[in-house]
Length: 156
Image 1 (cartoon, rainbow, N blue to C red):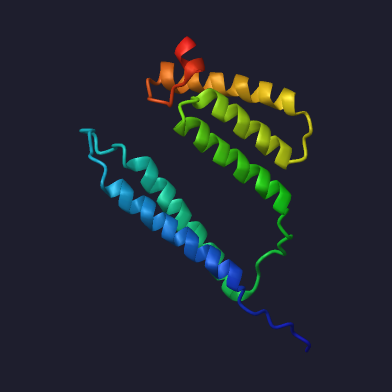
Image 2: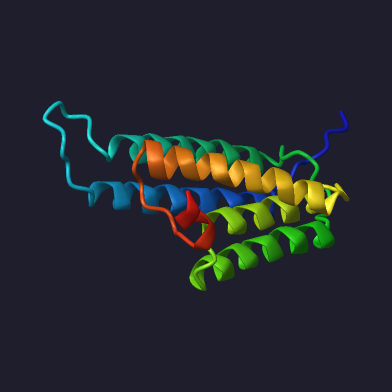
């Protein structure tokens, strides 16, 4: 019998370790939240569910990686990763310098669309602007959460 021996996938094991670490950090952070609900289901419930899900994913990933059964990974497109990272840097910079949530979100959306191969920059900025306004209205006005404001948000 000719059997192919599968070796453990070191990248898969590293990913599993990263997922487990992230699950641990989220769990720890959730335990520091104050329970404001008399019913036992407070603000720590959702992060704990996410942490448990991440821990399960970490364990499943570790088993698959240890058995050498990880799926084939394609090489990353560094240009696309650069567009997404650039969009994230622009988002952080715009918010840090008082530009506001809506324009920062629009630029992040356009950069991400470009990373996925779309070439309509002005249309993507428009779509991102509309999505940013909707998200801002939903979170800031309806849910009364505090989002970074800039000149555009002050008009709303």
